[in-house]
Length: 480
Image 1 (cartoon, helix red, strand yellow):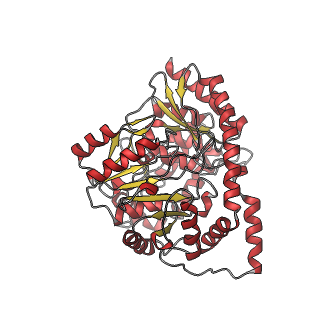
Image 2 (image 1 turned 90 degrees about the vertical axis):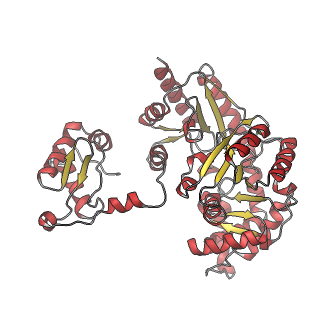
Image 3 (image 1 turned 60 degrees about the vertical axis):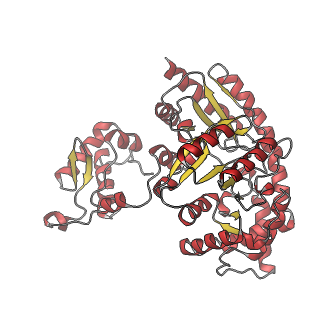
């Protein structure tokens, strides 16, 4: 809700709120069965006293539009005057609750909403800041469209042929030998994971993944009746002894890993560990999903060869994306894998959305072909390196007595380990109340109460310092 009552209006505040809520109900935005936010939440949203919300709510209850219940909250029971005497009503809430896919956690939903609130300082956002995006280069690229023919119809099931040709050249720089027929264009890595979950993995599959991991923040595997089992991580990457034990104990179906600038810990798997991991997975007949979203964002030297580059038996599905390096709004990612697997995933993608945007695919192909992409990424590396060093100094200034953290050699993140455990929920709320949005470590490891993922990629440095001051203040208050 982005509306607030107008204090200058002659109409009483509770009356304005009452009419606003009634409009939501009668327009069908809040259908029958909808649970109304708590009075405390509404009061904060509308910037009024709680008593004002109580008056508005009680009036709507008296009108027969809402029903108050101490145990179940306040719900919509009617949405037009003519329904007051009707015997049956359409209850969309029952349909919402019966949906196959599980909802995001409440924290994730709060983050997704708060990121678009004016004035919020985003310390958790995993994307490049607006000033690090190639806006000028893309404007020039699109302005040149009038001088040439651009295909705007549906694309091949595997994606634009020219883009797949350019990507085959692009991944070759990372040691991956493949052909366009073994590449699928997807709408970001997240869709690749969704297609894999519904197209390649059986119900009840057990996904082995680093713990902590980005994967724990996604309900899509659990929605498909699958399980995620954590594998221990050290400074060189996945611990092979932990992988072996968990595989034997839990019968893993597939391994998901982020070897380069891992999300959230920023660990980069060593070359020796990669070789050992690939050999171990071959022995266990355990296929690998390699997510390389951050691999090009190195600060000092490129990371070791990808697992896919060393894969001689078609065991690895390699995921890449433009979202972290070029443009999250393009919604362009890719999967490299055995051709028959790519054909299966391509068929599923056609069922899901009939292909990614043809315009985005054309622009991505042009950016790769003309060198715009490589030049942009080189610039981003330099700027992120500089920004990470300044962010490091800010952390040392305000959080050195409260936490420890890694020094990033690439990617977006600091993984903070707090000296004392705290309530992640309270920390998140306290910071958000002060206009600072962060990602609690519990999103990536449900058992932790001593970690925070801090991104230095999005916020400006003044915003970053203000946000870190709020985090420090919040931690000190929680430690008392």
